[in-house]
Image 1 (tube, rainbow, N blue to C red):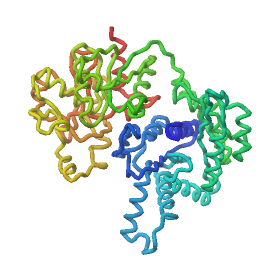
Image 2: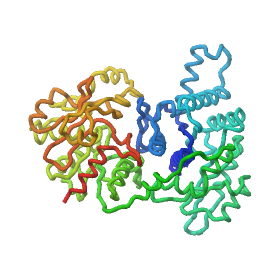
Image 3: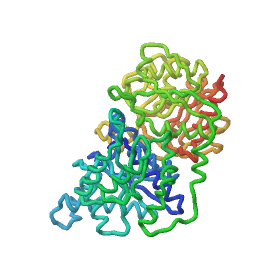
Image 4: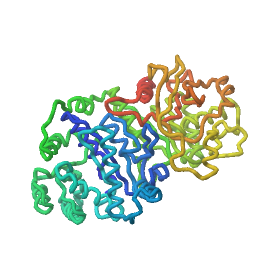
Length: 523
């Protein structure tokens, strides 16, 4: 089921295989009819992760990159919409030689072709394919059919891992295996027998539960692997290593471990915490009914953790609902504040009030994408005396559009061409010397990932800079403002890009590191 940990399990298995000396790639299959994740509501689907070539993907691609320390591209993300779109285009181009095009086998064959292309281009020893959704759902039956066909085509080269939940109802107090038995049975109905079962549960599996799963799911008990809840997702590879999961997979393929181990990973995960920093994240994609959804900002959260571990600090992250401050003055008891990306006017005025509070009270502030744009609006209104300053995204007829739509975007929006048309993926930024950003990166030119349609309006740059706003980085080709800073402040940095997409546990992002370092110096 959604959120049970299939993506983390996939990424962790990949890390284990890397530690055995093998190269690894990964593919995520989403059952949505959407062509990509770019048009999905983050509250419903979670964060949209952007690849270096501009692919708008499910957040699991981010997990793969963080765990495997490897960059992926659009080819590593497959959706129902993408597959059907491709098959229909091929049919229109007579690529099927005039024969009848059918759901089976043509949709599974297209899926297999995409998987094999990704594996070949990544030149990997192992390619892991994660199929999203829940077994038995209509949406992913065709992808399970593709998996069955791959096993038939390559019987010695395909292995199936079932990730299933074992609940422990409080009123009963016993871990129940029936959901996993049913999941395995539904998988059998699709023509697939799992080779391994990862038992997700609040606590480790005991021997009676392993034996029961083994008996009813037609699998040796050694291949029933315990996957209990852990404090950090980065503990998962270490837990799997205790279960010898990597070696068990290699045994299934008649392979042996090469040189390598998990010592560096273990050292990072078990780093000492010598202090605590309180960080507030101001957003609007948290609430879903009575629950708080953190997946909307998962890469930001993980980037904070990476930087804190590097500084031997424990982060205490709080979710601040932007709309709360639209009618009141912020009272923020945090060491630092992050305002992440987003779209639309809801909550904007609350975020601007928070940014003003951070600027005036010397609270470290880090603005990402929209967070940077709102910092420019706040500065324009309250320092440059442009009282009606705003973004054209929120008010097309505002007197001072200090944030304006990029010229190349105007025609796209007029034609309602929204999907995959933003400024996406890698772009270069040239840094100004003697700035906080230059100190963090320690080089003049950087490459970062983007996802936006609006930009700082260069018509206002002279006024902004005259009043003390520092433009610390620009795109050398377009002159687009990429980074803004304010001097005489512990840390006040806004970036047009998404640095969180390039942070990993072994290599924290330089700007997140600099932000966390500034928190250590706050009184």
